[in-house]
Amino acid sequence: MRILVTGANGFVGTALVRRLLNEGVAYAGDVTQLLLVDQKFDDAPAHAQVRAIAGDFGAPHLLDSLLAQPVDLVFHLASVPGAQAEADHALGERVNLYAKLALFERLGQQAQAHSRVPRVVFASSVAVYGAPLPARMDEHTLPQPTTSYGVHKLVGEQVLSDWTRRGKLDGDRLRLPGIVARPGLSAGHGSAFMSAIFRAAQAGERYACPVSPLASAWWMSRACCVDNLLHAARLSADGLHAQRVWTPPVLHLEVKTIVDALAVRFGSARIDYSPDERIERLFGRQPPLMDQRAVEAGFQHDGTVDSLIARALSDD
Image (tube, rainbow, N blue to C red; front, side, top):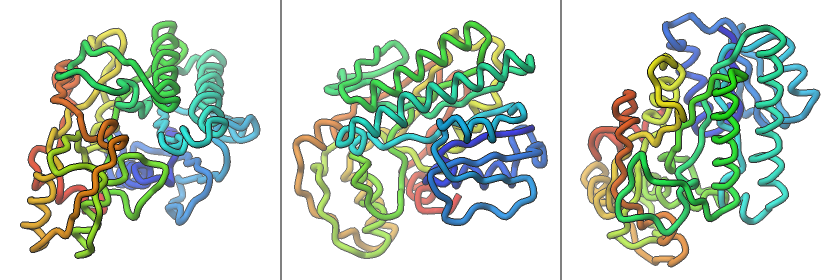
């Protein structure tokens, strides 16, 4: 199986690559070649079946190189984070919209030329729902993005849905929340505080949290995120609902619940609160969420707050 991973050097991408090399998709050893693309690579895996290419995943010459031979499976993770995309609209459009459509177009051409339709697992985002959010959310909640990032993710969903219907691609879309716990702080992620809480408690450092202790958010560890991405790749298309877009189950928890559990684990958690209305409105007023179709399809959350913390701070 030839697999392409965009954004392979990112927080989620590096963990996904490790899992693919160790476990494969259906079974260990079923990955014959792993094509990795990102703007740069800190330390690409030294495996015979790995080929890492640094550059713009939507550039024609890079697509020519990546897709010189057909691929069977694509994990499209690459994107400019939401806050960064809002600050630099041209960059956000180039990467999150036009490059993505260029990738999908070339994959569709591959399918036509080789009669080999690749499975595409697209990492969409809960940003498609916009803000403010309704009191409760389920599989019937309509997307109403209020950021360019959310709009571009929704466009990707719709194109992939249409091309799946037409047989050009075989696509699954996962609307992912903020994934924890990223190392360090990133100005590009508006939800960076969610990871910063974990890292500060782990290091015994003080942190000024930009949302209140009663702010509620959706939590998912990197390991759980990779579980769900791989599950999407393994799903049989038979019997799935027509849109094939899911919001995987999440733990819906107040920030105080996370901080209290971290304090138990590390002896203390030196978290102060300095709420920022904009950040709290976007990331701290998330309601209960249950996409029943995602549950029935087998997607899962981390289970408990203690399991979330253990998995979020692991290297998996």
